[in-house]
Image 1 (cartoon, rainbow, N blue to C red):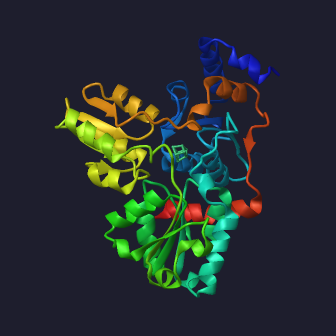
Image 2 (image 1 turned 60 degrees about the horizontal axis):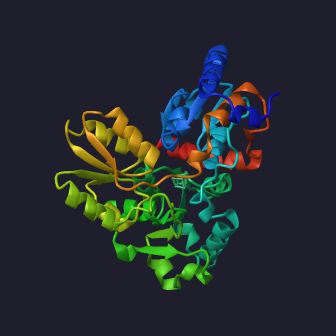
Image 3 (image 1 turned 30 degrees about the vertical axis):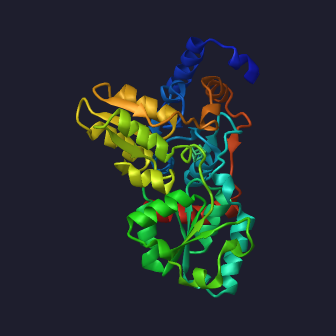
Length: 353
Ligand code: SF4
């Protein structure tokens, strides 16, 4: 077995040839999934490219694939491993690719918050929703407490589903996705409270928690909160006729000033559907924004600002080739059965809405 280091110095042509040979050898027993924020060299080698919802669907429904290589960040590969079940193996080319947003909430913090809601006799009226960008433990927490997972593609549907079950919802870990989705669903600001895990009682008064319809978690994605109102203003000054579309992990003021907001799948379609010759400014991860430009040469697609996700950027074609060439190396993602079973409940509720 060659060392990872030897792949790091290999010529790109040689890496691509090896990957193509392995894909041809394994045929549909191998599935390479890549998130839209991955670098072009990875996207070119993938069987399927999409956002976290689309990739979770692929992992769930593609039953022929015994080996799934997930090019993305850890929470996504964990979700794929949970949905893939016991007979299929999921690998990640770089196990260090995590997500700072997912790290904004851990299971101890969420359980402590839930215990506070229990003591106040509020938890019985609350459905917990975790964003896909969270650990398997938080998905399991939602599974066993009647809750659900959501992605940015279906956050609105997940909120509607939750409020059809009970009077309130507790949304973690991304404040902005929760707030932007709640506001788009006509939930008043006065019905929303923010739980800060670093403060006593989440920084919330008992009355506020009792009256709120939506309890949000104070967590954020640094890649999307990088975009500011000033970026929007200067884009509009420079391109008065432009359309601006951003991801809902952006701050509320940025979302409010944009023309549209939505998941990565939404942004892709938004650009594709725009008239030829139009300038469209995209507020999301830079690799995705650049790719939209390349895929739509009849339009002037520009990034709102240059914001790169360093964790998505960690996976290189050398890492991918190393994993494929050395099945089974120790880059397998596994989730303990007792967590996977509860997490699958919450994931399947999402896939069914
Ligand atoms: Fe996490 Fe944000 Fe990077 Fe997505 S873009 S992986 S949410 S840090």
